[in-house]
Length: 150
Image (cartoon, rainbow, N blue to C red; front, side, top):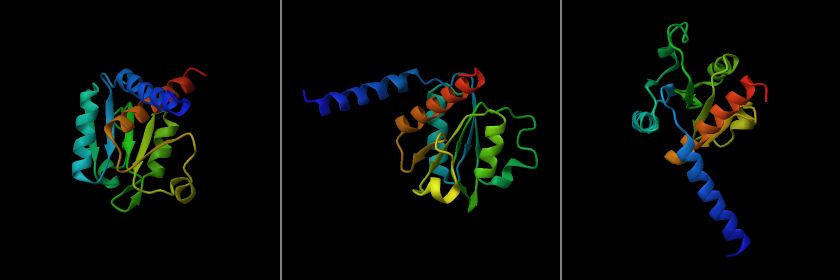
């Protein structure tokens, strides 16, 4: 087996291991997605990985004046543009509260256009379930590392 094939095999097997390890058991997941079918797919995917509750928001206005009142989300999947409005301000609120999140977007110029920090996970649409769940797992891990001071 060539080095390239070994490397590809390792990446594939590592992705499967990561996917198997990622569990959302008991977590409350926020999904900000304005495309109905994508939102339903993400909800199903999160539930298959153990999420206790999945809240779907299709417009930023649906969050209300205080989106965190009475709702404690553990992790979030944010479409970068929701109904024509950027979700970066809300992402900053999540970050300040220590809530891990990933952006799931069709925009390819995220860093330049929206000033997204490089350690924020961005999953490009169209994405597969394994990519999204692995990204959520990495975001959750980074959140744990930050809270433990690592």
